[in-house]
Image (cartoon, rainbow, N blue to C red; front, side, top):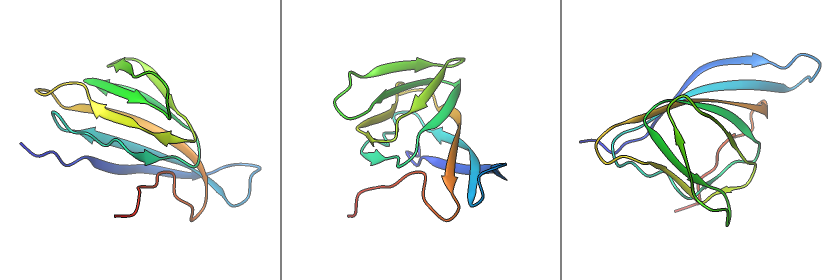
Length: 111
């Protein structure tokens, strides 16, 4: 069983009326038991769980569980908890971010 989280950039599009900005659409897959906690978002994102169960919390917020068929928002802050809620099934979601070209939508701490 692989615990590697995949992040596939599906599409980018210029933001009309906002030169230098683009929208990025990603497909993210968390294998069973995968944990991507401890990263940050400099910009908010809007997502939708396609399959599985996501457990998420920002900063000191209480953990929430997001099920397949539900939408969610990534805050522009520290994503303290970001994991697959199942040890047996994968979890997939799509998410879009509006970002300045060349800037990241997600950052990870230096190792």
